[in-house]
Image (cartoon, rainbow, N blue to C red; front, side, top):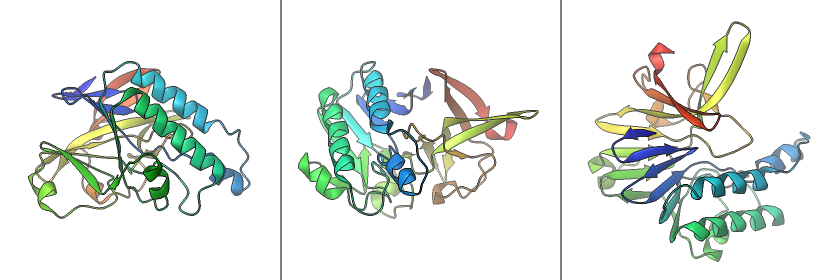
Length: 236
């Protein structure tokens, strides 16, 4: 589904058609290990489920560049041998389909540098394509690239929509599209396959880009292998 001219929602990624670029956000690889360490025991399926979903998506598009908008890994502290190995395997999968992989540094990526350098990938604060600026979203940049950008694409917030019908409540990952100052702002959902995200209708939001009235933002819900345009948040 095209949400603005030349940009299409493809599963949990945003595809820049003319630039043959796929943007994904917040994989948080290693999240299940963090849960296990806190006594929450779940099967360790995150790597397999993530790689399967990524490969299924990549087979549907012609991509030359893949951009991860930060929080590739979950843990702030040290990296386990399993995390190290799985992150490298995800990077290798991306290079199987793309000529270039760009990683923007998220607030969880404190120790990602050594892994990225293993594949000669530099961690960037942001990336700019023409008049599009792609960033993590945990802070607002104050530079010329931000000022002249027409469109800002970010992750970080893990946007989702909670839908309630009587006693039933379900939450779905979603894309958000709206305005920030004089720019188009697109917020990408998390590619973390273990979590749904933050219900933007009911929960407190973290990104400074979203400290505003979001009633006119449009929501595009990802569910059942389809994308659904749910219109403006004020109507939900």
